[in-house]
Image (cartoon, rainbow, N blue to C red; front, side, top):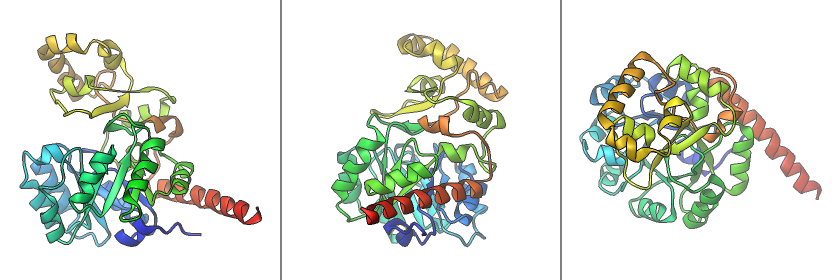
Length: 325
């Protein structure tokens, strides 16, 4: 029983699973692996490293499978020429998150790519639809990395109701297995977008120690806030904050953000040194609340297969139950 949805039809993919465009973690190797497994890999554009974007898109020039490229919208606005580099790679979609997509939407449409917009409220969803979004990603606060405050179970049906069938809605936040995909499908979502589960994959461009920490973290061992952004001298616009694993640095500065700002020079220097040394007692591991469901670091193709198999079995059982009733 393949899970076919408006999302799979629109993107021309086998499975309704999208790779979150995680900064420098979702590189070409992971994109290829997810797309080859039947999902939709989305390359991370991060904060706009031109050299990295050119390097990673070059690795996709001979790739015949479907893929997308994602950007932090407010950061892309500072370097709009990066969109031209992305579109030159012929992605099937461009994903924009955390900002107004309208300035970029015409160029994306003219290039023949779909516009995927990640949203955290109804107002953001309306803005995205007005800009011509083909797909909405409704992101809950459980998600790793940056997001806002509403839960996945709240925001997903709210955005589905608002979209009213006009465009597919994808669920994001706290999803790492087939149960999550099945649950979001029952809510009416056309698919899921996952980051943390693919962070802990063989092909992700992350440090082995960071992946290990995701696998050993218990449920509840993440925190959302600004400590790691400020420690990197990055200041996100409201209402967006970052969710990460709790470590010594988070414990030290959580609740003491004003003091951190007063000592920003020393803190950023300490943080930069720790990051360079691979010291994740200080350096951030962005991860979502699904960490308690993640215990290994398999190839991305195995992750996709597991999730689809479990979701199909659950949805088939539900359909049999409904039929019997």
